[in-house]
Image 1 (cartoon, one colour):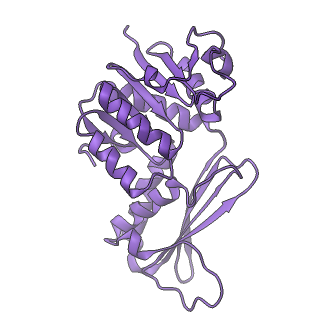
Image 2 (tube, one colour):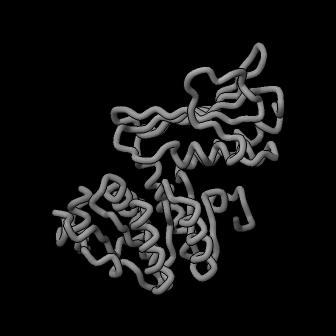
Length: 274
């Protein structure tokens, strides 16, 4: 059986290590072929498998990002926006597929990803959990059914080290709801309330952010009406769920032509790009 070749950038970070663990768990059809870190990392030169706790794999962590990018390789990137956009250029140049889980990428960066996807296959998703991607569908259905009868709030909680807010997943939930209601999220989103705010506008979609401790990721969509409320919640207890989803995406995208995809395609929810 042939193995899908996978590279991990940011291999010594918390997510990078879990990605390597998830790749090794799928060793029957996936193989780690490259791992990189920033040049100042103390893990440069060490075996990526040993750093990840899965034993020696014979893949040394390299300070050269370009070493991860070559035709036939799927690069998984859960780093930082600036690094991801630099990696995107390398992927385009070397015709390597990408799975991007980096959050906090601005509109210009999203546009750059879309442009790169005209020449290489890319899976770009705010969250690679199967449960969260099912949640995107559920909240859209709830929004369609409840319509203008409810106030909608999205509450998310993450660990104290997360640097962007709201989370990409929370924004994904908001986009799913806004799309179902034919609203423009940029126009109706409310990201904070303080002081005398006046009565709530039912057209708005509110976001509340919690940061603390080691919370992996909690997301709730609250549909509050008169006399009842519906809450749809997903709680992640381990980052491994994201790593497993990303590896699943890597195995899927390896067989695709150029295009921009998300987890909805991998799970069979979508058939067209975008």
